[in-house]
Length: 99
Image 1 (cartoon, rainbow, N blue to C red):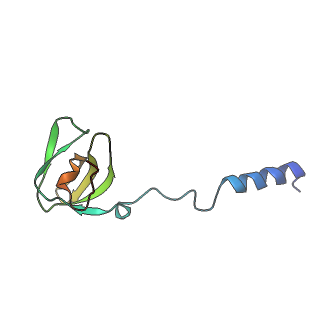
Image 2 (cartoon, rainbow, N blue to C red):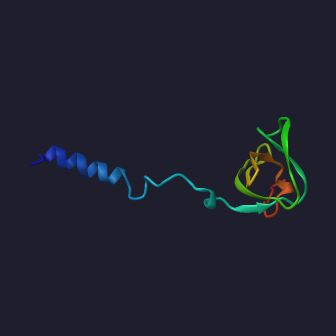
Image 3 (cartoon, helix red, strand yellow):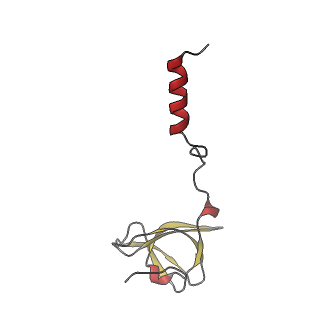
């Protein structure tokens, strides 16, 4: 039979661990999909040398955008083409820039 200390520890633990706090990591469908408006280079890191090119009309998953450097991280997942990197937000449909 658990003692008072055990019951108190269990009560504390249940208040710290909220239901759903062990949710699985975000899946691809959790990220919005946007369209590339014009052909644009894709960078491994914001502002560094490009390593690939996205074509006008490509559908990419939008992960995040940074205000400071003005880039958005995207992923392209098509058969034969898989890219993840950073692009200029002005090349993406539906991304609002604060410049």
